[in-house]
Structure formats: structure tokens, C-alpha cells
Length: 358
Ligand code: NAI
Ligand code: MG
Image (cartoon, rainbow, N blue to C red; front, side, top):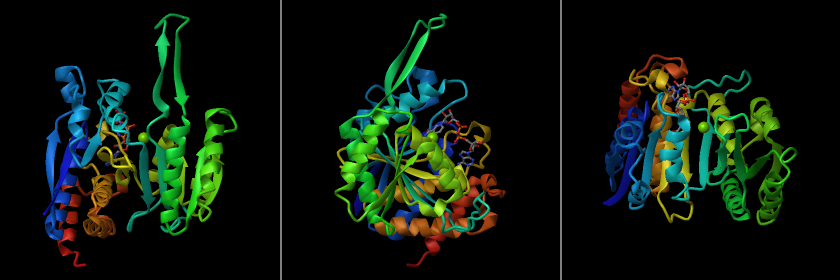
């Protein structure tokens, strides 16, 4: 029996609700598939922990995570604590030290889900966004001085390193190569930002020489929003900076039907450290505790985690079960225009896993 050690961090808001649902589905998947089990350890880190201890997680939190095979993460953020404290105190405090530099965000329109784009019926959107996840605009370099005085200054310095850009570019070209269309779009803002973004373009061209079989092009991020909306079928794999891909992937999720279905993986591709798997959405205060959070993003995230753990058959089975459930509009939660609860969607996916024969 293969045992995979999973650290589960529900976090805040709807995070614990969707992670509990996700663990139930993953367990059903492991039982149905056989041959492996998940050994799950729960961590109560997040805003409640902060209110008690003044920190989002213990000092040695990240080190404790190192002994796991993967991290399954909900969301962070609470209405009464500033977002930069919660985000930097937990999510970024894990991603950066564990060097999860490749953030991978697949977008597809799942069966039964309707895109808000008038001319899109489904196959037009099949993208993977690769987000540089370790530096750039979220490197944490900057400062704020003379607080509250008229001469106050605040800076956030976008920091791009040759090593950081090269490794994410290689990752993106490899991913593009592994997909049928072998198509990569490199997103920057190199017209206005003439240092880091121009280096990003230069490195893309250098790395591209090793991938003659991959067709690639460049887009400025503002024009990219138009292309995603008006010509989605021309895109496949997309690579962008931490900030740009953060924004583009929320757009991608909305174009594919809802933020509630979008998954992501924070990968350390070399597997020196555990990778972290999370839905894209945040803690969604407006629906917390109502039992209506869409758990599909967390389930799809579970597919990515199973895949990463080498459980390919289980991953494929879970994806099929998810698609079987999304195909039925009666099982759509409110964010998709239906009335189904988190519980109903979860139970339906568990049943679909059991029924799936292949
Ligand atoms: P959000 O993603 O929490 O919510 C945006 C909208 O989408 C809300 O109307 C929410 O109800 C809806 N939504 C999100 N996930 C849903 C789901 N699974 N099912 C149904 N509806 C869903 O983003 P928002 O409101 O900007 O941020 C709320 C908090 O979450 C903030 O504290 C923010 O910092 C944090 N956040 C944390 C993230 C993370 O932990 N990775 C990512 C994004 C935001
Ligand atoms: Mg975001």
C-alpha cells in the first residue's frame, strides 16, 4: 500500500468547508482505486490561530510541512485582520521558503457549465496559466517610511532574477511541449516597464531556442485581457509574472464559469520540497458558514495533487466524477446559478467515484 502524507490546512472562511469536502472525496477515491491511502494531518493555522497567538502559524510551521508529500490548502483572509498580514503570514510564508516557484492554473469549461462569453460553447477555452510564484511583484521587497506624515513614502519593488525567470520559462516551455497544441504565450508589460520585463522577454527568446517544436508568441498584459475574452481559442499555455498571472487567472476562472471551480498547484518541480494544492478562490466571507461554497475547485485541485503524487488513475477517475456532476445543472451551487449545497455536490461526486467503472 502506498501511503501519501498530506498536510491539510483549511485556513479561513470557506477554506475549512471546502477542504473537508475535498478530503472526503479524496478518501473515496483512494478506497475505490485501491493501492494507496492518504495519511492526513490537519493544521488549525489561520486567522483564529492569529487571534490566539498573534501569528498565523507557529514559527517552525514551514519546517513542519517539509516532512509531508503534499499540502492541501483552503484559503486565508478574515474581515477583521488586514489581508497583507493573513496572506504573508500563511500562504506566502509557505510558498516562498518551500520554493514552490511554479504556480500552475488550468482552465477549462467543464461539462454543463456555461461561459459568460456569448460565442463560447466549451472547447474554445483550454488553457494552462503558469504563474511565476517566487519573485516579481510579490517578492516582498520594499518599505514604508514616515508613516502618516505628508512626506510618507511606500515602495514595492518588482524583483526579477535571471535564475528565477529562466526556471519558470523552462517550466512553461516544457508544459507547452507536453500539450497537444505545443503553443505558448509569454505575457509581459515590456513597453512600459523597461528593465525587468524586457529581461523577461530576452530570456523567453533564449529559452525558446531549446524548444523549436513549441510555437510561442508575446503579449502585453493589457492586450492579453482582450485576447482572452475575444479570441480565447488562440491560446493554450500562458506564462506570466506573479502579479499579471494572478489577475489573468481570475479572469480565466470567470470566463470558464466561476471562480469556485478553478484549481491551482504551487509546485516545486524538482520535488526538493512538498508542493501545495489549493483552489484559486479566497475565503469568501460573504458565503462563509452557509454551506453553499462550491467545492469543485478544491476537488479539481485534488486531481492535480493525486497526479503529482503519481496516482494517475485515481486522478483521472476523480476528474471524470467531477465532470459527471458538473454536467447536471441540478447539482450546481449558487455561484453557477443553481441551488445545490456543498454537501449535495460532495455526495454526488462521492457517488460518481463509486459508479465510475473504468
Ligand atoms: P474570494 O475569492 O474570497 O471571493 C470573491 C467572490 O467569489 C465572492 O463573492 C465569493 O463569494 C465568491 N466565491 C469565491 N469562492 C467561491 C466558492 N468556492 N463558491 C462560491 N462562491 C465563491 O475573494 P475576495 O472576496 O477578494 O477575498 C476575500 C478574502 O480572501 C480576502 O481576505 C483575500 O485576501 C482572501 N484571498 C485569499 C486567497 C488565498 O488564500 N489563496 C486568494 C484570494 C483572496
Ligand atoms: Mg488571486
